Image 1 (cartoon, rainbow, N blue to C red):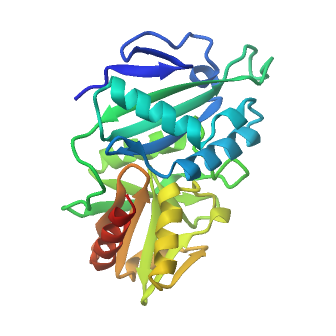
Image 2: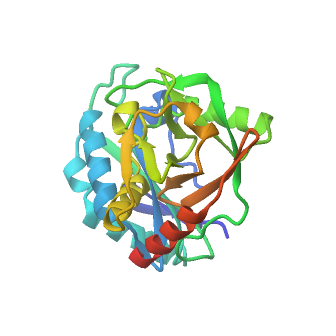
Length: 279
């Protein structure tokens, strides 16, 4: 099912409209950021958390108008677009860009936005039936700086990792930070279950501050499952009992293989059941 409409700066337009001009700074320079969100049964999930990350990211990029893009705004626009697209479930993407001229140096800091919806048939989060086969991507590492925790429009490292993934017939790849420690994957945060303890790269390691990452950490704390945000050497993947990845649109995906290593998915099943109780 293809989307029928998008919301471009408050205007509902046909999804196949040519609405991005050539001088758009997101197109020219990757000057912006985005939120990937999930619509379930007609409602935007975790709106407060998405709004908080979005507004903080806009402040970091010195984009004006961040106070307007609050949780109420996200929920209202998501539900309006869902109605127009006749969809109750789907993946949402809100792109916010610097709506200005100039070359590398912008001549203004006002912001523009576009909200898209890709409808889906299923509601709730479902654990993948077939575990993911993964490897570590080493050709390009992710820098650690004050932009690392946000989903900016500068996505070439993920694109290159995606090309590597396809070339080697993998389902996903682990991305390392500039120090060679585990950071994230192309589209998700990483969790490693080792010696009855759950580990995930700390935000100081340069990973995106994932909404689902935070929900899983909170779930583990409530369930008294030991969880630690840490600096993680990728060598742990050879000894781990379980590895899974998370994002706001898919929830949890379990990994079955890394090289010759094979993993279980017992904790993944427990956590996705608990996650669905929240939605």
